[in-house]
Image 1 (cartoon, rainbow, N blue to C red):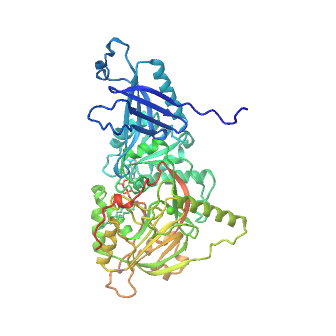
Image 2 (cartoon, rainbow, N blue to C red):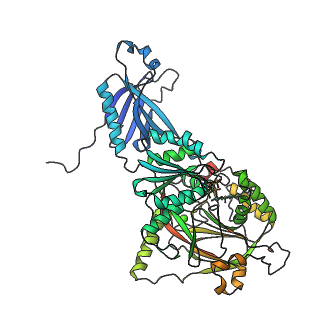
Image 3 (cartoon, rainbow, N blue to C red):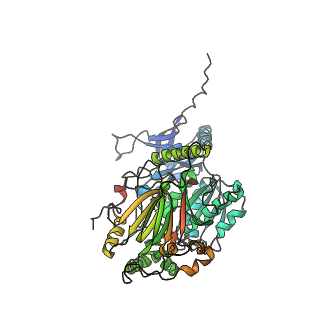
Length: 548
Ligand SMILES: CCCCCCCCCCCCC/C=C/[C@@H](O)[C@H](COP(=O)(O)O)NC(=O)CCCCC
Ligand SMILES: Nc1ncnc2c1ncn2[C@@H]1O[C@H](COP(=O)(O)OP(=O)(O)O)[C@@H](O)[C@H]1O
Ligand SMILES: [Ca+2]
């Protein structure tokens, strides 16, 4: 009887040479593994562990013909025979702290037929990795971070893309928003991904260009805060060359250009939540990392004046902002994200193929389907919680916001694709208490474990500064906003530190002009060339320090 199953792919196993050693090399297409081991381990090597190396095909970067150095074969009396045939396999090697490097191994043999058989088999198996990008559109910000974007791309990334056979169109930006505007014009369809070389600001440009383009093409009105936005299927890659590099760090585990390039080459895919920010019925911005008012807004405001300092501008501005110690009065209203499995105080963090993200997004989709069918009432007016008070900081983050300054981030247990954001409210407190809270971002200690800090997992929130509440809502149109940033006097005591103009919103490092805003999370709106944090064990990456 004939079987319905396709025949199992044949395992290719040969004795090939690696440098001066004979190796048994095996390509197992069924298990998608390439492995090799020395047949006679050299003197000095551990002969009791004849292990060898195994590389998943999914982690092979490229395979190509190679020229080998004569010294490999002269001593083996190859002089009397024809030149050997060689091929090089480049593959991913994992280093400490999520760093990846491209390692290579060259095999050779004298049998031309065997050589071509290997080359063909390896090319065929790589062809099956259909999720890998073949054509990329690259934007480089030459002024981001330490102004090394071009150099980083040319020296560390372009050679890897070229080895992997990826074609690129590269645009070095000439002005702010060049990349965003260009994305409205180019034929995006012809690319398998868009790569930005720069920091979070540069990523934000590409994000706005792509999301904006997709909404325009699908006739979605982005000024409607309740609009169901269309998903972007084209993936975005980030080559870190900025000041904070939070989006890259929080989705890959490190801000290292070579590591990011390898994730792009392998065709990784990480869905990501995006928050839309509106003032009434006017679209302001999208945010994927930090939407912060108060402390982080003020840090940004002062740092923009010191851009020439590069990444150090944030340290200078952070110190200055800490010393000025302002708090801001207003009211925050939010709806909890009821479908999510996790909570912001969890010990478990978001990892590659995160179960919480998968389950939560599935449950949200089901909830939205049921509501769309009309079998359940819409919950637009339900479950609003309002908190009024004086705040040092109001932060909304839809990912952990881990970055080199804070390796576990502003909300360590936030999830990349669960459709929710963590709303962190830091109420008015003493300067010392605020410092204790800030320092905990750099250690394993819980930054939420203070009586003046609250954290909620939300699907949306609104913020109204005190003076907006006091005014006639009719006059809160966009045109009159500028006039409204007059000094706000603390209602309790004029000398308590609240006697200060409003703060501004820091939206992924970009300033937002309006103070009264509403934010909503859009579950998995975009996709990155990333895979989340692998084998995340927070303890490995952060040096625990003493509780202050
Ligand atoms: C006494 C020690 C205090 C240490 C506190 C450290 C807390 C750091 C948390 C940082 C969160 C960063 C969230 C990401 C923000 C970026 O989107 C934004 C723009 O980045 P880029 O475009 O690359 O310049 N960066 C910032 O707003 C900088 C915040 C720095 C705060 C000190
Ligand atoms: N060619 C350019 N000239 C000036 N500004 C630019 C250019 N290209 C991009 N930008 C802007 O520079 C800002 C900061 O970029 P980013 O790459 O995030 O660096 P950093 O992390 O140092 O802030 C972004 O707002 C981006 O829009
Ligand atoms: Ca989220």
